[in-house]
Length: 290
Length: 256
Image (cartoon, rainbow over all chains, first blue to last red; front, side, top):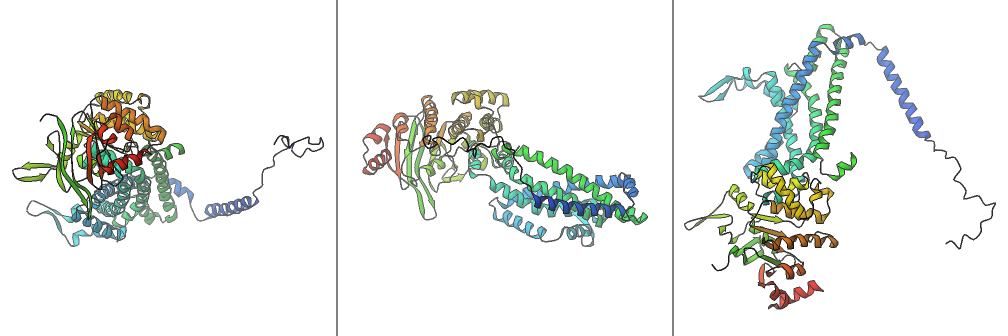
């Protein structure tokens, strides 16, 4: 090799490029695309600013007590419905893989039925339960009037939670199946009972697979709770509607509600990131991406 | 009983559909001794091992560990399957080391070791940690206590797995091809830990292809093929002067 580079002539400076300036490549296409999008965006912003929106109303109602109460109720319903959904989801998933054919088929039937009807319809079914069961309770022991029990809160929690459970159970099931069978065997080998194995070894590992979709479901649930406005549950959209029925500032109040939905979802997205990191501990792929 | 028999298997049989994985396998292991099971893959070695701690249910025969019938309770002329809780209790006394380590990936090395002692045996965390540190020291991984399995080499993971089995203070440890999933240069560090464990008087049943280990460490060697025990005896005799032509053939094939 060295022999070949005998004696380059002094005039041959073809290989002397260390002192030259690097001119970066111009991305003309990108610049054009960005310019077009920015122009469109500017137009949109202008449209909103000259449109018939009274921004003062948006400002005024953003922190109105009725709106903040509605926000609290929205968050409350998200937590309640999601709690019902996750508890049912875990239960149904464990029933599904339990090996007991009766439990397994009940789990399949549950998912089939509650995934098969719109959430709005399920809310209305629960809310109107009194039409077919005027009273409920254990025969001869306790009895309630259904209308007293099925408040908008309870109806919305059951309607949203139970249908959510059908989806969550599939997430949990895929999480459980993602755990290597060797983990089950190792847990059994150190003498763990079935429940302890699920709680200490299997579920924590399944969480890594389950957290991202469940995070999405929580975020979806925040918005799904708006359905409860239909059955008079005083969540944020419902309260916004009540206000605009009175003052006719429809779009302003819808913007107020959308601001809060967006704010809640943004906070949850950040939270999801940290939860994912916690359950990813011990996993190489997540560590390096941190 | 002259000798102290820890494990006694009588006519253990296991079928998968029409396939007979174990055909009346009988074996005895004396307390404090190391017993190696060798044989070609598919010969039923691992299945037999997994019957001892009930990871597999046998279809026939019986196994006693420490004079306790595994998986069943005898009442008069009836054998009753024992409850899941009883099975868990029996498994506590029987450690197992797997081919693929099966450490809990969401727990550090020391957390893997104390998991059983704390959450199954009910020891205090401090006590369990103290004992686990000693075990980690013993397998030469004291400085890796707070590492996750994904940060350890295969050989290190397997040594933690052995320490995890020892943490339960079992009567017996089963080894299911403990070095088969390792890179060749990592095999000896695991075998050294197992030798040390054998020297300390732990009863071990080892399914392995490491005939050198069997020759140096095992008291008895059993050769299995097609779900049957072909030959069993003192390690030196079975490995050096096998009675069965099939055993001789297998040993020659592994060595070459």
